[in-house]
Image 1: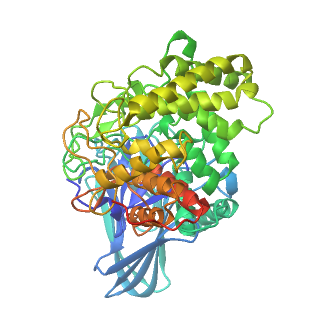
Image 2: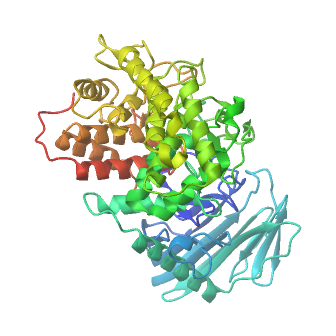
Image 3: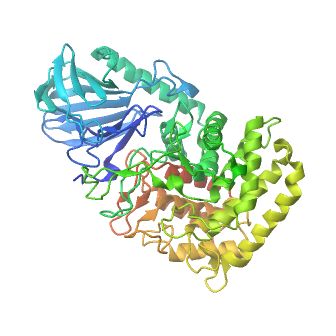
Length: 610
């Protein structure tokens, strides 16, 4: 059973796949060649699912950071024998710069160990376990490399030193003196293909330098945001780029599966996919921390992946694989114990079959952000978006599972109705570009019907707030989105009352926000959601509560780990980050809230949040 804190991990990315590295030098998660590929190292989810560690034999203090404006990780070990520095990176393609990042990433994990002081014994333990730990490969030492055979993968570890092989584990201890270094490179290829060529140590160092240069070039192109929390916004932008699958432009929700929303419980999901519900907020974040090219690529992916004959009564699917795949059928991996015993470990996500009405609004809001100033729209995209608007108009009165993917009965969720309103509002604004001016009268009439229904059935006078469902009494942090999408202004008394109610009733002792407290068809209670906390900060900024907005923002931002990564949730009892990691939506919320606070009118707060 894996017990290491989630916050102990740092992310490596090449805009196609990802690895997670502990603070003491162990790669405990690696999926290549895609984010959703089976893991090669999976100790994150089970002690026997594989890892690769490099660290001094005699422990000491370890510090780490990303090299400036990169996702190249530098870990410095200070021990009784001296000081060792380890550089870790997933290699980008040769001389890839700027917007080309990830275009030809080879899927190679690079590790460079340098002794900078003293004489330090360094321990290397290499235990690959492909296919989520199912394969215990056979290892063979060859000239300059260790080759592991088993299953569909051929793993080639370029190494300057021989490793002792015992079963499916290889290890060695090498003493390095000041100025000496060791370079390693791990590459996965198909078992029936040609073996990769060996990588020489000096070339490994150059590839790491080239990868760092690639990340710096991207960061320089995207240093758009100027304002408070600038470093956090910049780091969040790099995280979003790392979570992007470069061949298609898809952005995954996280690089992991089955890190739990409550420790030891069943709320364990695979997040290595792309959700439509994230679209409009993602594009807003990209416009702040990235640029128009990333926005366009992401929307183009979603438009292609989700294109379907909505006129035949089909639902718009809510999520897709990074290659546009639709069938994401879920299965359990019973041989894995899960992080801290949180089973089952799942691969795939059955939420792909759910009905969520909010996705229509998300797509049309995103289209409005991308195309509102455009003079031309691709005919297929135009036809599809008109179909999305028509479907929102036709289905807004139907119950669904909400953006939270409730696994209980369908209900009339306020947020779903709200996003149908958003969809029609944006379609009306785009009508000329869509060639749909003849539909404006009908869309306007339906939009106004939705608005009236939300104001009548979504507002509960007794609760004093907008509620989770029509005529319901439970609060939901998703109601904070109402001023964010322009349904009501921030100074509307009902918006202010809802913001106050969420702050008073859905926050924990730390000031972090729960999504809701209502039953959702699953056992156990989840932690607080960082996205929802950033929504609260964002909404407070729009209501003129600048001081409180900054307080709430800082509370959420302080949950980032030492290298600026945010999980999905925080355990209300322990304060420990939980859930899949790093979480795109948390970083998106941070970027958008920071911009909203920066741009909000400076108003003196009337008092503390309840």
